[in-house]
Image (cartoon, rainbow over all chains, first blue to last red):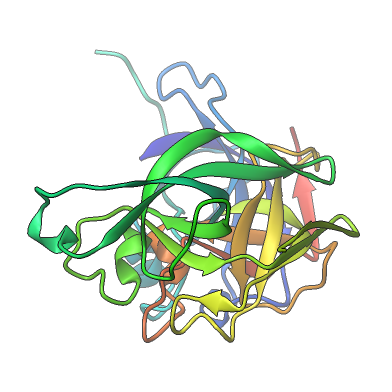
Length: 91
Length: 99
Length: 88
């Protein structure tokens, strides 16, 4: 999993049927403690209602995405926002 | 999938059982850059059941999807040739045509 | 998923069994300023999007999920991007 900042959203009419009604957000991965951007922004499914600018936790569990969307095993998406991060601290 | 050119083969006698009687080719990844087909950075070994020969341009599937190819279920591979490429059109031009 | 533009297509008569009927497109991944990132790649396409279209694609094992019986696919166009909002 990685932490990320929500940077925007994507709209799509023509898409895989399993994504009907799914909210697609642009997330910029960051270093978990400093928040320093890390790699390219990607598109993740959101069922938690994350706001633009929010810090989130993103998981790459495709099975989890299917469960969150109540979609079948044919759903071809890996990334989903699984938590809204309050803070991440070093020990 | 990546575009790759077949540049060789790997011959091995002692193999994990899943690799028995499986052909292995060495492929060099290629990319489309500024409307041209150019060599990429990586050279990998892939399974091939389609009869790819040296110099052929092929499409290679990598990762756990490779084992979804027919006959690969019990082969612990992570790369397989899934097509022999005849032609590539990119950015309005024919960038590769076989033969 | 990453965003990409469909920059072309790939023709291949000899394919892994089951893949014959599927369209193979050439993708150039883009960042959300629409600048090229990473390298071009081949993907199957579920959307019928035209060359030049902006799309979202998935990679890895998930890209094979739509296909039953399964196919050896590691990249697949999942959605046509109508519009996106990006606040850098």
